[in-house]
Image (cartoon, rainbow, N blue to C red; front, top):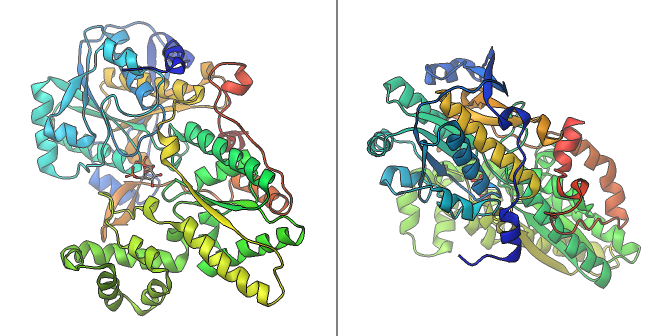
Length: 547
Ligand code: FBP
């Protein structure tokens, strides 16, 4: 492996741990827990893992722990810090008992079923400390949902004498981890399952999980890029940059980047939905700001667009829900049709009148993108929908009409961008490096204590890392029932942007000023070495949520 000078320097970084994880750990059990909603259903579906207590770690006395073999899986989209979770599990296990062994299943959950694995040795782990990416063992989106997969996993684990699995994933992967934990506990299979909250999207969070790892670094990378674009826009003064940002459903990334960079426009999907806005309302809002700035001679600007926007426009949401059901039941027929036009016509003839009206009004390219394959969890692959281009075209058309009516006297040239993959494998910020290493160590302790159905949790994150609180949260506590693939399923509740939350309120106070005036902030690149107030700072979202 050829390493850059930064990577070599970064290898020697020692991630910071909370006090409770620096020596031996004592576990303090809290109250019994309940799921966030649909308690009766969730309790019935998870009789063995429902209601378990919250766990908090404190410093304790050293105890002897018998040796264990543990398996780890990276699941879903990459997020900065995954390698540090693995090095945290590895170091945590070795500290508890040097004979503990860690195996990595390759290519995501599929590796567990296909028995594709590698032993994670000190030499291998050392190469990946504090680096971005998931390439140490790879990731994948195979969904573990069938009994045959669970059974095969038992066979594969037994062959390696593995008695615990750590699943590092987002809300869907941790939902599956919980189902697996329940199945193994009910069966007495002797395999514990522990989850770790990962996703750049920031939508796996709740009272006990303050943020998912990777959100901090990814937002910093996007904010650097947005800042660079804003400086260009403010220098050339001739383009409107429409920047779509990853985040699947929730607008946390867009909101955080807006708080960091102060763009002229940032659309928040959750607000669009709450106000029952149409696509035309969104386009009109943008076009009006373009026209107002143009009236002052500012024919340039930046607009941040959340990746999942189309799913939050109520009429589009209804259409997408119908398409999800329809495509799930008619996959073969639609797949057999030759061209996109045939597919669009076939679908349009078979959906409700209301959804048909919306479907046929969309640009063909967007209608085609809405019919693409769902991911294994039944989600529309919003990263493939070119909302930023669609909005540029629609704003342009609106401004043309406004020009005719004398309401717009400027120029409009749009530049589309999509930032997503650029941030997912960045070298983790100090915050993510420390947080991930702490999560990995936490998972190791939960395993040593024989826990299952828990997610590793590290809280109090805006305090210095010494004061972070580590422990475990029962995954069932985060669950509710939602419709997936046309049927009600237990899933971890997605945390969307709260319109009564402090980060959104801060944005609301400022957005009019940012729209009318050019108040750009240029955050610059992540700093790994230097003063703590520059290098260890976390997101504004966490700061505002907790102050
Ligand atoms: P996870 O939820 O698995 O963490 O993935 C997040 C994400 O990066 C989304 O922001 C994005 O919509 C999606 O993955 C892209 O998926 P893919 O990796 O399959 O292109």
